[in-house]
Amino acid sequence: MGAVRRIRTDTGRRSTWMPHLVRERRTLDGIEADPRLFFEHLSTSKMYARAFLDRHALRFPEGIHYEDQLFSAQAYCLAKRFTIVPEPVYLWYIAPYAAADAASISNQRHLLGNVRDRIHVQRLIDAFLTESGHEALREDKDHKFLKHDFRMYAGDLPHRDEEWLAAFADLVNPYLDTLSPGAYARLPRAERVVLRLIRDRRLDEARLAARGLGHGVAPRQVTRDADGRTYWGGRVPDSADARRELDLTELELDTRPFFGAQFRHEITEIARGPGAGVELAVRTYDPALRLPVGPQRAVLLLTPGRRRLTVPFRLSPVRPGVFEGRVRVDLAAASLPLSGFAGVRHPMVRLTHRGQGNTGLLLAPLGFPALTARVPYRSGTAPHRVTVEPEGHGPGRLQVSWEPVGITAGVLRPVARRVARPSVRRAARLVASALR
Image (cartoon, rainbow, N blue to C red):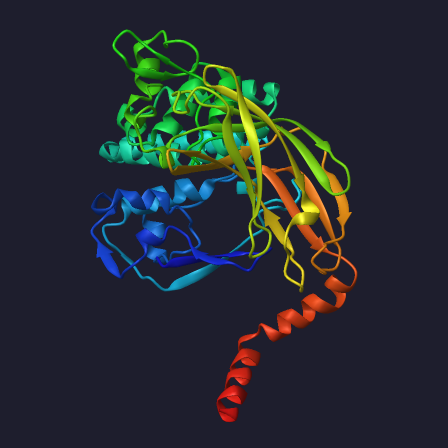
């Protein structure tokens, strides 16, 4: 097997799939030597001896998706020896924002049939591990399912409605109940929280928790028991299993350094302001009560070009651990390059306490319609079309995108791109050297 090179079709950015598994050339005596390889389940990056496939009657199951996961798990377990090489052997083109009807199978996670197929394949793998004498690998394989397969669905939960969430829980919970406790224990706490909330059918809370995955976003509320342990949500969990999984004590929310403290910044209202302005109502949750009593100074940060746009505003306390404020952002005040700017940025909120700063995501209401305006820039930069909307995936941050229009798009940016080419820069340096 070799490396898989992933290429974004929208940006051209290249990366290696599971780079830590293919970093160096090595030969392994079976999957037991490195069970992490269950994460590298693509069949397309491997070369197989035909005699090996025929000897074990190893074929793809028909009629279901994710069949390569079963095929690869079987190949890993049946092979007495295999070799990994670090060179890329397969190019995987990724279209992250493809329309739902044109998306790849792995990006059709909104379809409940997609969930059903993935779980069915996992059950087939589990049966194979038992029948082939590889039951000892079950925890590693379960961990891979939770960390990779379930995690992809979890990241989409903020964008699913109540009916979908209920059907999703119906599909996944019976299978989640069969997984090894050790596989859960190996996950980050934030992922364990989402899993437990799904298993307890606290579906609205699961959606809230999923908006913080990978970003250190606080819950809206935490609760402490008589022993001083801290739990997700507004009550101490009823069962021992739920208390174990929803226990946030290890995160040290009330004692960690302020720059790493967890807050939750949510927009509760958004409206078009005068000119190129956008008015936001912001609510900040401070569940660990890290901020002092009284009004707090906050700054909204936005950096479309090289210069950062900073907009100060005030957060006033409304009850313990909750602050609210309003901020008006004048998008015409952003400093853009003369050649214009085409791209997407996500505003952040910065708090300061005793000389230390803390910067966090600004979560948008997921249902508000996009606000678009043609913005003339005071700095002399030609107009841009600017759109403010909720991010359509992941945590659902507030998103601002710029698109040059007029002379900026037709003349200045193409010239700037040509000037920025390495060959042009090298020629300019040669000329400058000759003149010296």
